[in-house]
Image (cartoon, rainbow, N blue to C red; front, top):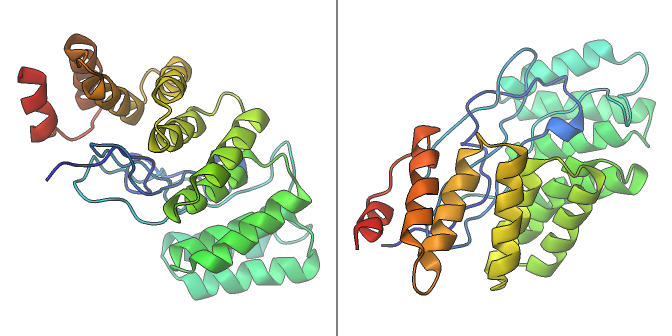
Length: 262
């Protein structure tokens, strides 16, 4: 069975983003879309811990999952909630969703219009499998602070997983507007564009993602898939990017390797 062209999935990244990192460092997962899958994601963050990783897999990815956020240039968590933030981050890293949820709800009692607290609560709800609640939290986050690029990406990934591709594209485009150097957002937008058959746009976004981060294995992998999908296939270009992806840690794919030999 042929695999699907993939987006992010919280199983891809090799290290975990610090739970006390600003929301623009959130990593996310999403459904697969093209014709061969490599999953990337953003694992939940815990203090001094790196985002989790996993290679390409044969099945479509699950609904996106976001990591936690901390004070940054765009905003901060509520005043006098440092201990709550630490407790939430620890619970998040230990997958104790009820405890993490309770901590962020406490923060929101202190400041119900804190965009980062809403974003982090959204990440908790996603991890707990409550996509509807996560969507509401991320929407509140960007309503309060539209500059939160990764909240826009989180929304785009959820909409994409629900089949609402046009709305997903709108969110990814806004994420890139707010943070043009976010390679993952360009990858997400490429996948959504490919889902609508916008091949040239998808190729442009993947090339941009690689420009921004030459070590982005998933973008190399997905670009290889695009080249293989061309008629006729661009075998040499596909091989170059596939080999780069594998060298960067993406799992080998027998179907892709067979096609490269055709």
